[in-house]
Image (cartoon, rainbow, N blue to C red; front, side):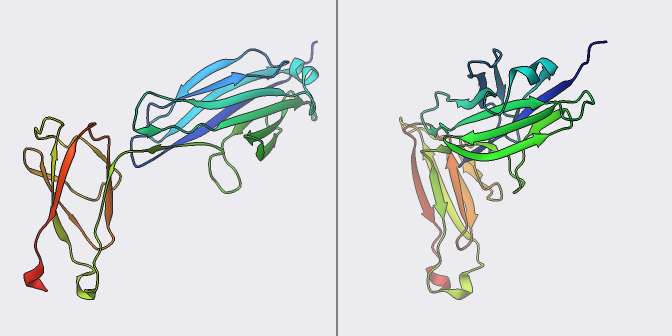
Length: 239
C-alpha cells in the first residue's frame, strides 16, 4: 500500500480602519511567488469584524519531497487598494514561507511556516497536527494585520479649562452640514467612531449632540466639498 500523509494550511488576517467602524468588504490577495511553489492565486474579503481567511490549502507527502528549509513554498499576502479617495490603504506585504516534514509517520504532515513583514521576520510556526493555522502570535494578536486610515474627516472634541466643577458636565453642540450647493445634508451622511455620542437631527442638516470634557468623536465618509458650522450653547451665565 502507498503511504499517504496530508496537511493543510489556513491563513487568517485582520483589517483595522482608523476613523471608521465599517470593517467589511475590504479585499485581500494571496499569491504563490516562489519558483518551486505550486500555482496559487486567491482573494478574500473581510467580514463585519474585519476578519478574513485563506484556505485551507492542502498538501501531501509529495510536498515533503519538494520542499525544505532552504527551498520552501513562498506566498505573498497583500491588500488590494480600493478607489476611495479619502482612505489611505495599508501597502504592507506579508511573505509566508512553508516547508513540510513527516516526522511522526502518522499520516499528518508537520508544517514549518515563517511569516515576514517586509524584511522583518515577525513569527514562525511549527505545527505537527496536520492542520496548521496561522492567526495568532504570543500577544494574542492576529499576525497579518492591515490598517487603513481615513485621510479626511471631522474630529470634534471638548476641552474644559479652569473649571473643575464642569469636568463631568455634558455640553450641548449644534452641527450644521451642507453640500457644495449649500443644501442641507440630511439623514446622518457620515460614519462615527464613537457610537456613544448621539447625533439628533433637529431640522434638515442640523444635528445636536453632547460632549463632556475630553470626550471626542470623529466623523468620516462625509461627502466631498461638504461644509459645516459648529456652535456650542452659551454657558457663561452658569459660570
